[in-house]
Length: 76
Image (cartoon, rainbow, N blue to C red; front, side, top):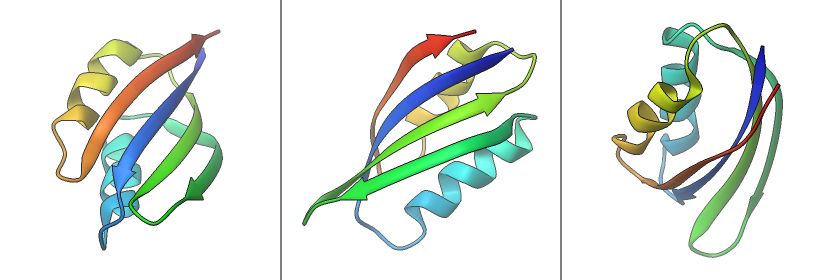
């Protein structure tokens, strides 16, 4: 099973690394990453593979420092 997430992150040192580390530690595989930034924030589109509940992952990511928003945009 795969899913797609869109995240908005503060432009802070280590923000993207914390997100990717949490995803890996929760047992998900990162299949694709697409990131863009402006003066204040990163927008990150992720495609993940795994057999766990993506809603739980979204809640876990939302609790991280520097994460503004997490949206699940597709499951497959």
